[in-house]
Amino acid sequence: MSEITAITPQAKDKERCNVYVDGKFYCGLKLETALRYRLKAGEPIDLAKLDEIQLENEKAQALDKAMTHLSATMKTEKQMRDFLKKKGYVDAVCDYVLEKLRGYDFVNDGEYCEQYVRTAGKNKGRRLIAAELKKRGAPQDAIDSALEDREGEEDAAKEVLAKYMKNRGFTRENLTKAYRHLLSKGFDYDTAQDALAALGAEDEEQ
Image (cartoon, rainbow, N blue to C red; front, side, top):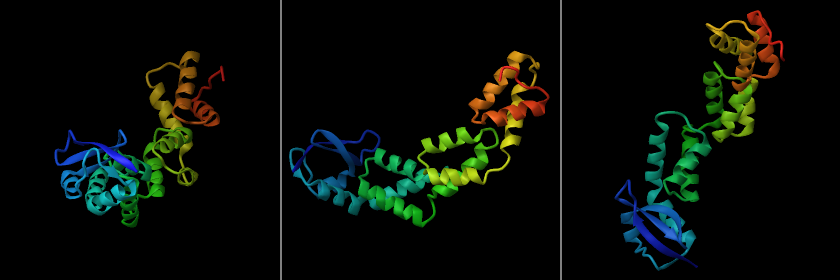
């Protein structure tokens, strides 16, 4: 049996508290909930029971927080789970909220990836876009599907190159730097070389 080792008020929300179990932070709860269930430091606690307490008493509040967090921009499921975990919600509450959000179609990793590709694709190549989506927790199949339908990779590379070369001379040094700039933006070698060729010059060092 585990033990509640501390219950402390949250710094940013005086109506909530942090519950520590066996010396480690375990979850957040409304003070009202902690008092109702007579949770106290030094008392034994069944972790499954503590999860159940939070699920039954705070799932509505967790969903509300998630909806507010989503109001500004779309998020991946992983981003939403990380947000809820950071707020102190246990896995059972996170699962409940994510199931609701999926049902409302407020989180949709496939749609998120497609939207991200449309926006980022204006000045980034496939490799960088894929890396950024992976960092955001998007599943690989959703990333692959969104990039498979992408058009305009070559045009995007030419646009990025044109902006980079503006007011720069066509010297070997500048063209080498331009080529590396395209690679840093996630374009592959062939696309970068084709963009340079279309501009009327090729990097002699490639």
